[in-house]
Length: 201
Image 1 (cartoon, rainbow, N blue to C red):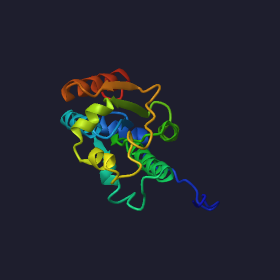
Image 2 (cartoon, helix red, strand yellow):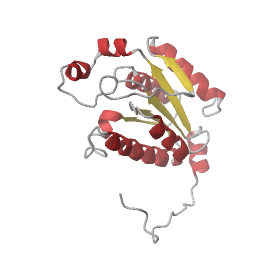
Image 3 (cartoon, rainbow, N blue to C red):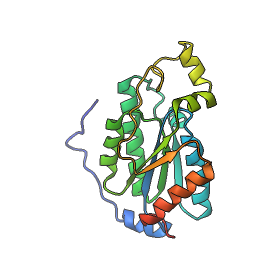
Image 4 (tube, one colour):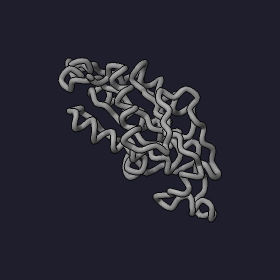
């Protein structure tokens, strides 16, 4: 991977993140949903974005599958490719936070090191790790995309939870029970956002 050229210099713009946040009426931050495939990450993130939108917040939802259609379509599912996938998503999320947006990301992101990398990239208070904790048996029973069935049949390699490891967060900002109702889970996240003064009560 190419390193930064010494002639490439970061350019600060006259309109600051604080200016943009003032216009949006809330802080910019990333809600990073992590969990197994089928845990409910995308469902909860989508439901939360709808609620935030109704509240007038400026949001964007970055979804794992959608990102792999474009930005990361050249990547596979090896550990190195997963790491690069998360790095790219982190960089995009960082730009969106600078734009003052509330960014929701739904990625398995199985390795703690990559999630910690994005937390460091975003800075203090801008990265909120949301662990959607759903037992593997429940995720496999849901199997919304039929991926567990393929993995069990040996048709899909490096599938998280089957033949590839998932490292659960040790200190998630919010630990959700993925078997609870989505409305209950979104309420918990909204409470946290208000407690941290990211959105107004």
